[in-house]
Image (cartoon, rainbow, N blue to C red; front, side, top):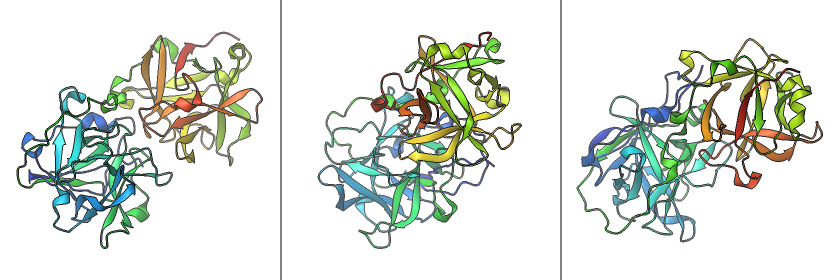
Length: 400
C-alpha cells in the first residue's frame, strides 16, 4: 500500500500545531502540496506548534547551537517555555500566501530545513541565527490539513514533512528531536512511531519584529502543479534524451542491480546511438486516475522505470527498471513531466517528489555511458553535476 507522510496542525488562538501518525493510504499520483491551505490571520502574531504524538511543543533551543553563531537546534518539549512561541509571516508573492516563514518570537530566528542531513532518510530542522532579518530559502513551510483541526507541515523547498522522532534531544532531558522525513509522501520507519501531525494554538498577541525581511523564495511553489499531459501521439513509443549528454535513456539488458528483480538504467553519451539500440525505446502509460502522471516502460525489456528504495548517498537515489513482475507498476514507478522551456522537461517521480538527473559518474558496465539518479534535494538542480543535468527532451521514436 502507498502511504502519505502527513503533518497535522490543530488551531487555537495564540495557536498550537500537533503531529499525527498517518494511517490512510495515499494515491502516489497526487501532490500533497496541492492541498496546502492558509492559516487564519489571527494566528500569525503568535502561535504554538503542538505535537499530536508527544503533546509537547516545538521550541528553539536557547542554550545549544548546531553550528556556532549560525544554526540552533529545535526540539519538542512539554515544558512551559516562551521559546515555544512563534510568528507566521506570509505574502501574496509567497505562493499566493500559502507558504509561511516561521520565526521564533523570543530569539527572532527563522525555522528552516537545512542542507544538512542526519542520514539517508531524515534531515535536521534548525533555526537560522546568522541573520535574523533573512529568511533562508529552505525557511518556507506549508500547512496541509489532516482533519480534526490538525495539519501536516511541509518544507516548501525540500517537499519533506516535519516529524517528531523517538530519539531524545540529548542536550535537554525529556525532549524529542525534530526532523523532516526524506522519503516524500511516506511515513518514517515503523520503529520511529513518528508523529507528523500538529495543532496550532494561539498564545498572547505580540508585535511583529520591525525591519525588512528578505524577499520571497523561488522555492515556495509546488512544481507538481506545473505538470502537463504529453501529446497522445508520443505515448506509444518515445526516446528520452539528456540535454546534458545528448544521449538516450537505456535499460541495461546485460547487468542487474543487486538482485534478480532490479535492472540498471543509464544514458548513452552519443546522440547517434538512438538509432542503434532498441533499449532506448519506451512506452508511456496514463489514465485519468493517474492525475497527469505516467508509467514509463521499456518496449524491449517490458520493465517499468522506478525510483528505487535504495539511496546511493544523502543526495541521490538509484533509478532502475522493475524485472520482478513485468505486469506490475511499482509504487514509485509513476512520473510527471514539468515543462522547462525549449521543448525540454524536468522529470519528477510522483512518489518521492525527486527529479531525475544524469550524473557525472559513468555506468562502468557499459563504456561511455552515465548513471541515472533522482536528486534528493527537492526543487534544486544538482549544480555540481554540470549544466542541464536534470533537463530532458521527450521525442517520438524513429524507425530503426
